[in-house]
Image (cartoon, rainbow, N blue to C red; front, side):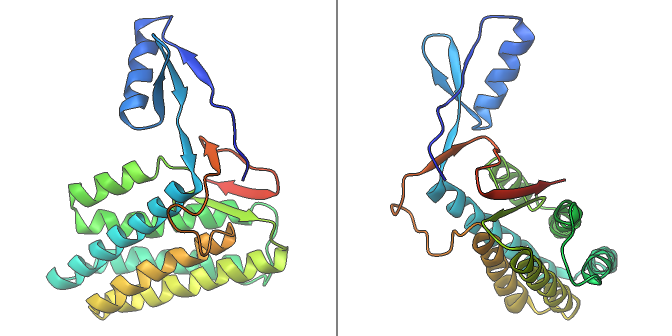
Length: 220
């Protein structure tokens, strides 16, 4: 992923616009630039990888907490509904145009259901903030130079992990479900060729939520 020049935004204008930009700066999406302006925040590849890992750890913690206090039946029903959507999507045994968007929406519902069930404002708030980082939201499905066959295999593998996560929750297997959710992010990294990236390895950066050259992105 190549460096992108930051976009500088001026505070000159209506008070509403100024307040909006200050709010976006507070959420980490803009950074101060000049005397009265802001620039769109640039995220490094290392920051994206770190955010993915932290999101996975928080979701794993949320799932483990659920098994310790009792997994609600309504959560299992919601997760199995997502599994049914995935089964229908993969029944064709191939990926067609728009399928990545459908999968992204199903993936978002699956992960959101776990966070909603644990009802922990600290965990859900941290995850929501992490999802401001490009490509970290479960709704965003991105592939870096992957064939249609590779795309299918990666998504189907992630779908099978969803089934294992659901079974572990249903059986109240706390350690297992936490481990599965931490491992689950591996497929997302692999789809973007980010496997093996560690802090300090690379300084490439991207701005906002772009569609990079050679990268197919679907977002609900």
